[in-house]
Length: 281
Image 1: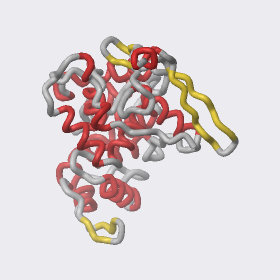
Image 2: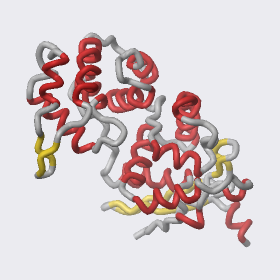
Image 3: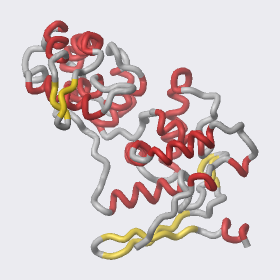
């Protein structure tokens, strides 16, 4: 009986304000890519689960929003001001602080001026905060903003991403972040820790591969996954990040699973430890 169920196509419903939409997906044991099964639609974090989440958000009026700036120059600045361990609220506060100073609308400020502005206290969610790494980020911005101001036209996310890699302080992930945001690009991926954990959990990313050494190979796998499940890579990336970032328990389950030694094919996806039931109401 169990095998028969696994061979049946899956059906799920998405309820909107105007009715319901039936979603049919391949059987759980069918492979999306070699070694990566569709999995059950109600089992986190399978590809089937993510297809449902992307379509649910799209159909219920909650599409992913990307752009942070009003120009490529502003987008570069906003993404450069972010980074590992930096709360998004503080990064955006710093960006708005610089925008309010006219940093992106007139002559490019000097490094010293940018650093002075970044060292000024800012009010974030009712409390005063100071931006970390003001000197380092000012140095990056002072070098990157003039180049961004004169940037040529780009026909693809990869073209923009590759051009951005010349900018100081911009690595593959930040460059993909900018390209995804500015162009809505689906040929690049922002491989942060959340995307890596999900990719490893479903067997998409080999555990021996790291973003430091294999970023572009991992990115290609992610883009191929999105293409094969017929969703936009930019949406899939954003939805995975949003759900993982808002659920510490989910992250803990995945960490527990990924800390175990790799086992056979039947144990690729942590369905028993972190299964999430979807509610179709």
